Length: 257
Length: 257
DNA sequence: AGTATGGTATGACGTAAGGTAAGAGTCAAG
DNA sequence: CTTGACTCTTACCTTACGTCATACCATACT
Image (tube, rainbow over all chains, first blue to last red; front, side, top):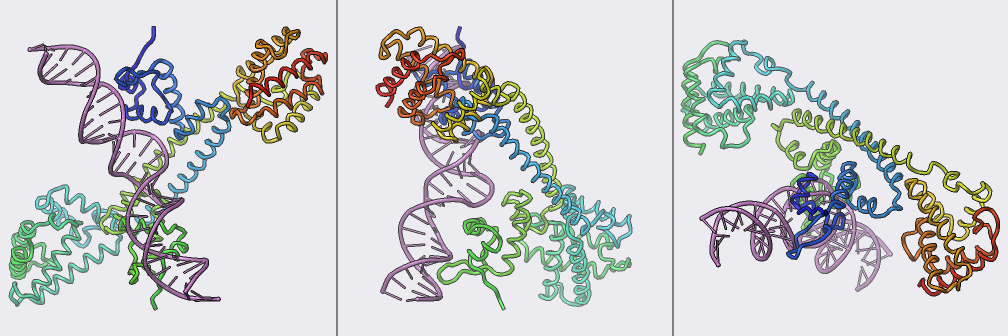
């Protein structure tokens, strides 16, 4: 009563892939007991047992070359090999401990330099205002985008965020000073371009196609429909809102593709 | 005052190989600041700093692809990446713990099934006799060989060693029964061949060239010069020693190459 | 008998992070 | 002008397979 397994059967039995058995055959780790006339591999019980042993040593992270020796050379120093292996494993574990320590330290270090929470992120705005801001941003760009960007913002070093916020303030001030100019003038458009880049940065959008003209125009409409976005000091400024909307729309239509 | 490093200089400074810098250049991880007219790479201070950062993340086991993103994309979620990495490191550590446990168990299991010490290995012989046996073996085959074989023997499952010992006894008894025969007869030579194989196994010599004819003949001479080697029960047997020596020498001269 | 389905064999390419080597060009010093 | 030290690019090698691509084989169904 001899039992024969085809490659796939043996593979399923042992939980390995057919490719693996092909490989083991080629490197002489596990040869089929026979080949059929059409060169199909046939494995018997002995091979199944050997495969179990192979998998055991493989689980111990022995390279296949060593496993060949372990199984084929009865005088192979198995115990010393295991002891040596144990030492190697210990060393690797210690290295991992060191790594974990370093990673922890790094994370803490970074966290101290980053925003701690959403209040801080939206600081400067009244709480309800921040909530509304967020809600509308979600409506405009979708929840996923906003969450992703917030996550990125929270991980950004404080200085960078402060820089972004400061930039935004500067841009608005520069625009405010240009309020009498033609919204299509080069000076205004330059500031609008800065604003666009800043918005993209703030939302963590690196792929230009992610914030298309249509979105930016939507943001422009948002400006006039809710003056809150332009209230530097809490006081609305509808004239400036309209001015900026026009500049943004022109920018979106002409400079963005 | 600008400082320029050639590849080898930078490599030495940072403790990496030139090939590594070539690779980092090719994958866009660290490009030289300029190339000389003859396409020699030149690195500046900025590149040195970047290399330091690269090595930091590399020590944390980040793949180079990730490091590119970490360094080039300011919106890369570094903290989440680190947290995720920490989780991966923890998982690897736990796996290592499991492995260490298994290895330990395996070693203990094996040790229980193997010889514990040299006394046990040479058991059956009086202690001084074992020491002399060992000393002469060292003279014959060299200390390294003997130590290696003893190490192998000590790691061999008990059953196997017992089998070897039993075989040796059997062979000698079979030869004793053939003492009146022609040493060159096929029956005798068959047993001698078994003896030779046994000796080889016992000394853990798997490479046939390691125990050449000359050694085996040396062992044969040893037999008559010191009858202890044939004293089954402690009583010398010079006639049998001579018989066996002849058989061995014939075997060595004719069957071994 | 022909075909649809699915197992099989072989070979080749790709992976991560370089090591190693080959063949050719470059630089500074003696 | 030669020698030795450097450098360039190209390309193959490593581990333990995964993933095709191509072609052959086997069995069941029509």
